[in-house]
Length: 417
Ligand code: EPZ
Picture 1 (cartoon, rainbow, N blue to C red):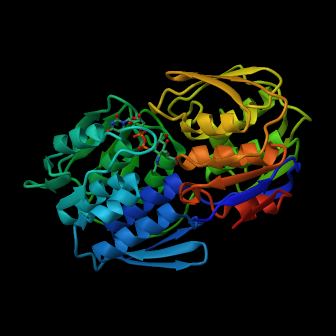
Picture 2: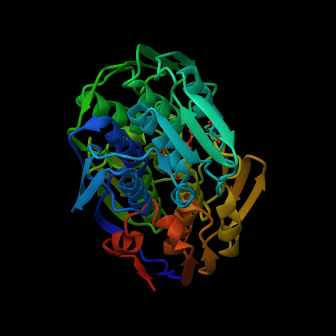
Picture 3: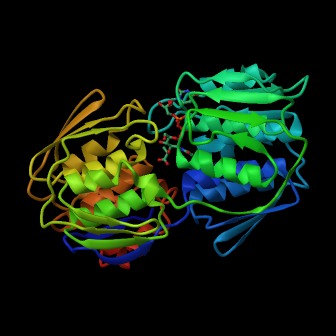
């Protein structure tokens, strides 16, 4: 099993290009199932979650071929409507294929996504909405058997929670449905807007994406197009945190700074100088960071839950106490135990984590508990005294393109063995 060997305390300096967003690529790959002809997704990140999605598309009978940073896709030869257990288990977010398969094939059979490191991953909001659109769903023996006896019908859907995945699934089921679907309390993440932009380029009629109410007027047919995936805002936040905790100076290229609305002020509160233009961000860190008084994770445009762990790792050596409140997932503090092994002083009470800054962390043998927890341990490792051995890389490789190569280009001493 491979692991990262990180020698800490080297200030990160230089420039990084941010790869395409994982959480945009996945629903976009599902969306290509709806299109006739070829689609091409540019700036598609080389991540294991993208790989699994490509395997799912090929299993369904679609064509998928990578050409450098682009994926060429076609669903013209799609022949299956089920996702086998071993592929569903590799990636819970495969549930986003449900709406697309239903819209294209009229039926779908998926195994229920298992729980994950972030706690149970319920899909009740997805299923409630799809049932309102005329889907008959039989949940038994760990499988979802879905049919649409009268086809997919547009419907007014009020989401109890602005779920990203549920909003995406409803959009994918609605674009070819009969009639109009109106989603209220929809998720407003940039990835939702990216998906709507792609679908509209293919001929869909979606308005309001990125706001609380999304309206989708069903159309007859969608034609594949070329599309450039937005940059990964969470990868951007992660690399900024790594530079900040090492007292470094980092310039990010190919970012959408408007997607970092709640993140950049956090770095300024921590004592960093941040200069942001439309597609670049430059961060200059102080010798030692200030604490961040309160970080509350919220649906977009609030502070993103995916950035909580990397920012917590950064605040572990600040001059004072930082408080985190994780409002989105019920157990997203698995990285706290591992950070404590490196000398962090963090107390967790339910959704609240109180981080007392210590002078330095010390390198240790730690294990990534999940994707963003693993990224947090890389941030902690580059800032720590001594050497950190980090295992569990399968988690990290889901969301970061070769994290060790990326960080090495800006001065980190880090290698994968
Ligand atoms: C997406 O997950 C992202 N994944 C997550 O990123 C991200 O943390 C999350 O949105 C929130 O921003 C992808 O886009 C592939 P949700 P998703 O549905 O869609 C509850 C990462 O690290 N809920 O908005 O699963 C759920 O349990 C990953 O890149 C229900 O109760 O998130 C959670 O507590 C992790 N019932 C909350 O809502 C449902 O039917 C937010 O979930 C659906 C969700």
